[in-house]
Image (cartoon, rainbow, N blue to C red; front, side, top):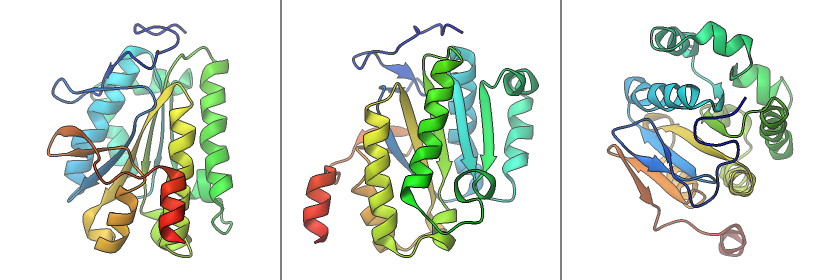
Amino acid sequence: MLTSEGTMQMASESIALGLSGLRIFPGDHICVFYPTRADRDAVVLPYLRQGLDAGHMCVGTMDSADAEGLLDTLRSQVDVPSALDRHQLEMYTSAESILRGAPFSAQTVLDFWERNIDKAQQAGFGFTRMVGEMEWALRQMPGVEALVGYEAALNQVVQRSPMVGLCLYELDQFGGDVLVDVLKTHPKMLIGGTVLDNPYYLQPDELHTLRQ
């Protein structure tokens, strides 16, 4: 399946995020902090809708109990059954996709995303949009070190692949110290309806040195 924006997005070509004319670039790994699930949906729904309209594969892992409600809302905007049937849209709960009842393993989660990137390319989708709700980390990760290490490694996966990724953090669920560390692993952040270069971002080797 060829996308309307090309079978392979080049690093210099921006794509529509889906929000108010915002543009993002292949390889962007964006941190999204939101106060309420309504704010989450105001980002995720247009992001997915824009991707489906552009012919991108869209893969999401949702952790909250209302994830099915998000899909129901999306059904009112695009042909979700058709997208699911042709595997252009893949939505999972964290329990069934990246955790599967096992202790947290960063490599297991990274393997999940890389399998989906490979699946998208094999199916003819030239580009992948990833979105992940991160509340599962509160229950499964042994500490902030594991979360920061995972996000830093995911950043490398996203940057070398024809994709973009949004990591979703509900502000009330995470402590300020965790959010500060998470911010350091994302080159960009979405705040107030604007995508910004993150001045607090550290390259993985810099982050590793800092945390030693």
